[in-house]
Image (cartoon, rainbow over all chains, first blue to last red; front, side):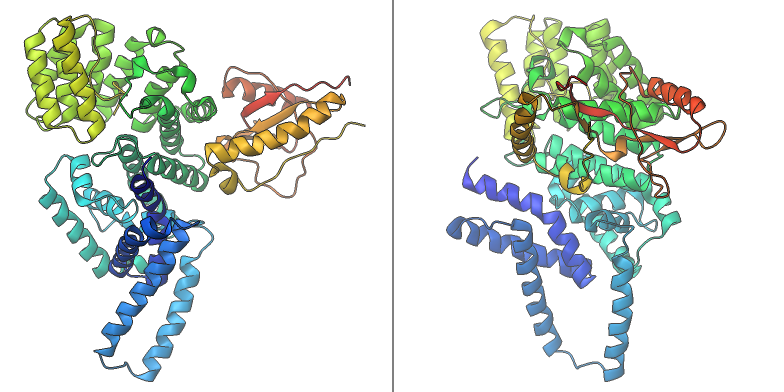
Length: 429
Length: 123
């Protein structure tokens, strides 16, 4: 990793906690965000010269706090001082507030921040967008790509969410037990999306941002301790662990994508797989299936297959069919098509994805899968066209390189026997 | 006399170790364990999965109650443990119910094991 890439990774990893700490300190989302932003800029200019600090998180918090206090002082000088009694009242209120915020139930700044973002006054899409922006520090274009919407639409969505949070004075209240239960689904969705962003970055140089994945797993474990009897939270934690266990095998030494069927399964993290399987086992006892449990069950079938040819594709196809019923989405159908191509052949899979072209026309993975299926059917020219479209929509350098390799192979061999193009997880979202 | 050493630590801390940090701790422990093994003093060494993977069977009522999560009471004390090799959590719970019928009262916390070294004591 180059030094700049290291700094980028260190900032990404430290940012959520720094922001959460600064939000607790300033209790204002905009001030806290601006403070983190300024601190990150300072980090980018000083770390390359002076070397990275031993504790990037503490560095960002300290610098961010100082910058924001300076800015507040400058603003205050231009405003008249409030009357004396108002100031002392404020202090009392703040002490009580800080105590409530420090409530041991929350255990963790970031989890509390997540519950705040998932305020019921915000529509679900705004909750998730806000959390990705604030908690995970994703850029607006990255979030827009994750939601398959335009950047300007996402920018608007986030601005609106922030305004509502400010108007509702959301950051000042610590939700109680019943409110927490209501928000749990939204919080789970956000953790899932944070993981996905790390698992397959929607932009930038790095295709995998392991720090985001690890953060999501940490949050899922915390959530599970709040709600130890929720099968879907067990399913979520299991899913994230089973997916993340494959990380060491997903990229080769040059950072190129290695498809699931080509991965060295000896590199998979067996400890994490064992924990994921144990959690899934525990969840299934409840006989109350949900989307996370089903996805975890799919990941478990991959984890249990010692060799790619041992994979139970028919069962995976059936699980995707269940998932399609639970939450119909073209992306899930696309994933199912990969399982169908293994279980019932490429022609059946191609029929399945043709109707998705309109909805998924901007989606890299769609054209990658389509090219792969056409290649299997010996339709080399059409495959080539699909791959060209995939390249045009690649989000990371690794995705582009991966497709480029498929095209080169196509030209070199002109042989329809080799298959499998798409995201390296090639069968799940 | 056999002694059991029960390991306590903050799960938050241990679960947030990086793979390298974890491996470094395990390597240092392995050096100590090797010494004990050579002296024929080392019994089974077990590492448990986090408490989030735990299930508890309360056997102080009939039928016993299965609760997700670790054993949380403080009025009862740890008096012993079993290691059983099972295909699933359901099988482990069945064994726990069997044992519970023989000795009602209290609870069993069922925790999956992440690593197991059999050890080499004669006893």
